[in-house]
Length: 406
Ligand code: PMP
Image (cartoon, rainbow, N blue to C red; front, side, top):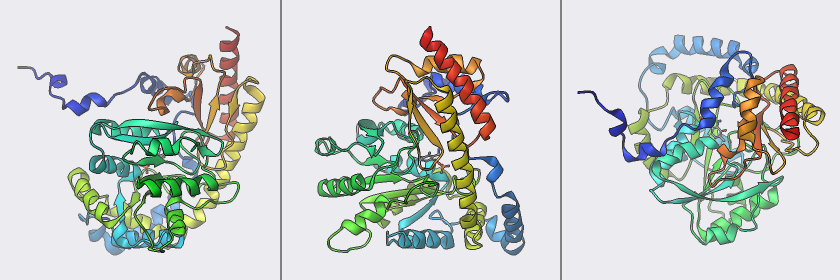
């Protein structure tokens, strides 16, 4: 008898969906399409030589250990290093607060597995990171959202939302994916003050923190909560912080981390055991050796320079080729910017025509858990060369002008 797999699925599977947008975006992987749709780092800047040299030495000197199973919590020297870095950054945490994950995407999934019950409401920015929505959908999360402007999340209605007691707040404070916006210092302070008053935890997803190429660095939420606490108790656990090596070293090594209260780390460890036992020992040891040798720190300025040049190329091309009534953000770092079209335009429809013209982006609706954003689009500037960016934005500008006059 033939098995009907669609009838075997668990109920939660119905909450996993492949959207029409994703299907369309598959077309953008064709070689002659200039895609601003992905979120890929520039491959030209991967430190291939250094990774190769360190890997070779690692395998020669500690091959059996690097190829063996290891602790779910992660490679201890790497956890210690991350705890030290967080402490230097103003969040005095210990190794017991650090869990290494297989990319910060796994961190999001584990948080869903451990914290989110069906029907739980989460407070998110609108727009927000699509991967988090995808991670938490199967666990039955629902959302209440607050809008964002050039200073990040708009907090005017925060108290009203906190009174409804969302399970946690999910926020990307720096060069947010998808908008490229950064949460201002005053708003960071108010967010900490209000959420500590209500006892609502924050999940700070700081994937892009190190990619600032303009302006002054702002304190992370996890460090601010310590600064603002009156009794100087150190890390209170109010903020859970997610970090990743994907944007500063390589996404292919799948290495991220969660900083959380030790009690929560123990639960996340149990959840991770059921998922993958542990993050690959080899890549953890590799990242540790890369950091210790100073290769990651020396590499970051190079990434920043390349991305600044590409952002500038995109900003210049947008000014030159986009219709006058389209606006866009001016990110001070990260990999994305966000364009807003006139109210009546629908970026999903525009994508269909753009793909014909061999240029792509992600329509903004995909990033809005409660709907809206039909007239918005996310544009990635990290992956294509300045020449390609210019050509792609020219094509897209032509599509927009045609749609407007249609
Ligand atoms: N969070 C955010 C905000 C991201 O943009 C990404 C990558 N697109 C991730 C998490 C996941 O990254 P990774 O799993 O590669 O660490």
